[in-house]
Image 1 (cartoon, rainbow, N blue to C red):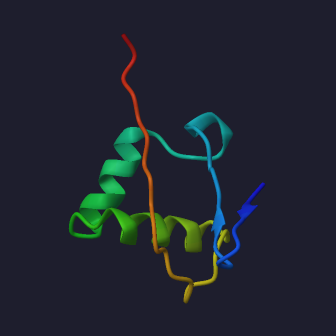
Image 2: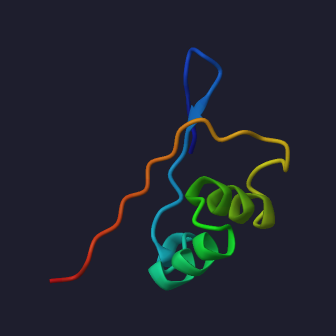
Length: 69
């Protein structure tokens, strides 16, 4: 569920690979395919998965990851 902000932007979470995100290796391949541009890789994934319009702009991006111990 997106969180709407007063400036007309929104915050969204796409979760883990098991809830609709993607595996770290897939994410790395996507970033590599976009010349190392993480925002472009995420934008492409969001467009390809029908989550955003192709002309939408990502203004802020936070990527969280972890490794199992």
